[in-house]
Amino acid sequence: MTVKLRESKRIGSRHHEKRRGRRMNSRVPVRLEWDDESGKRIRVEGHTRVVNPYGCMVVLAESLNIEHRLALSNLATDTSNAAIIVWKGNQRPDGWEYGVELVAPEMDFWGLEL
Image (cartoon, rainbow, N blue to C red; front, side, top):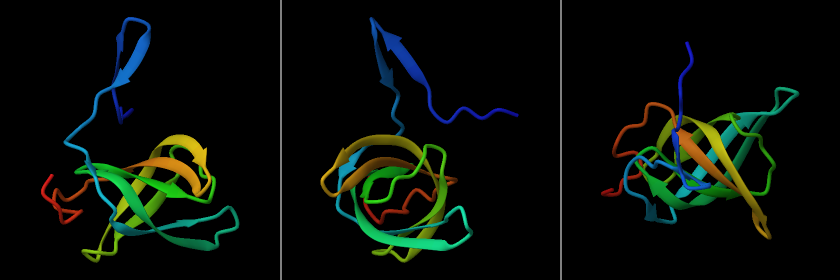
């Protein structure tokens, strides 16, 4: 079974992605965890730049691939959720921009009214 994570629609010659939920600029402390190629558990703490009920945008020094699976913990609410990298943006001085989608999120995961 194929699951479509996001849909795009074409308007003119430009692609526009449909977004689910309202986005909010918010600096929420988070921890991301994943296993590297050798099986070693990597833990990185940082903060979000943008959140919505279904995910967030974070910046990480590490270079990860699209569809990389990880665990995302909201350190402010002490909650965790499985997540997947769905977008890799530009490399900034402080790291790579990533769009992270929560898998089966609770709507109050961020502890914010979205």
